[in-house]
Image (tube, rainbow over all chains, first blue to last red):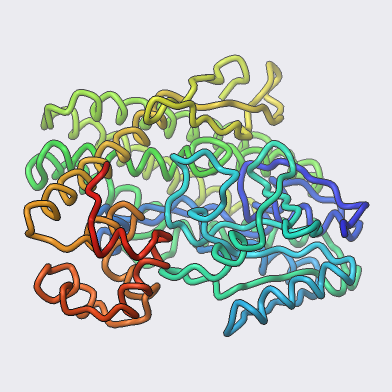
Length: 333
Length: 137
């Protein structure tokens, strides 16, 4: 069976993409930037003590699940969210929902998604995708980061949904059940921006928000002393990957946020946001410059102290700019 | 970023094209946002191939240690499956402490057939590959 009127759409980011497609299926037309902005997706965090394969974690977004939950709350959409104690129950519940003509969003591990290029398949458990049908023993999958709709064997999907490790998906699945129609988009937009200002400006130091960026800048300067050249390059490379590779729309979601501000300016009739959007684009460009410079340092592999110093200074400068940006954005709201 | 500046660098890893066409948010000449698609960017491609170099290295070193008898085949397949101790422990459903012991050849030899089968199914390999380490790359 196949849910006929479901349409696949490629997005930059998996969680906002899944939210976009699920809501669209129920006639709620939004855009990815609006979802990302209302969901207060933009963030920064650097946690040296949380290591993934020995490399400290860096994030440019809020924790998984937050965007989706927040957008639903802001727009008055009730969701059914379930987790399961056993794969059998989880797969049966998925089949039931599909039989009832409901496309289903799910949390999954990228490692088992065989349609990705092999080099992308790490144990990352925070990926989101949609199933919109089942034929023989294969599920019809709409994965927002893929260009086209795809298929996945029931066996692989079960493994992906019940992957172990952190964060364990436990078969988490979700779909909208009721849209109340109370939909003041302007209010939701302003509320999303306020939340992002709060996250960026007032998150606990030193790991999060604008302070986290400067913190990472100071850390990066110590890499050549503290680590051998190889690990220093590996740590640096991981920042680039988090910023660009995992579907951020470019510059660690900064371009996506700038696109949101542009749409927000029109909807809330506030022209000042257009100028803010242009500024966010510039900040995004600086993040791209940072990634470019970091790649050069990485390639060099000499562990040159002054080049790591420069990278650190770049981040400290970006931190100051983001602080200034969100301080002024907050005043506009 | 202006849409004219979008890089299109293919991602070649392990000698194969691993490019994934992704969505990028870019501005047009008037500064208005739109989306475009791109296959990759040298900076991110380099970061990813370097991460894989590191993984491949670790797998190869572990393979050698298994052959020389320093580590058990579980250590090799753990690296090969891109897992760490705690991930593997959760998959097998036992404490990390025990998994760590099973990486040692001495305690690995004492493992029951059932336990070996459990590990083998997590690694998605036949149990014989654990019992008689083929050592292939």
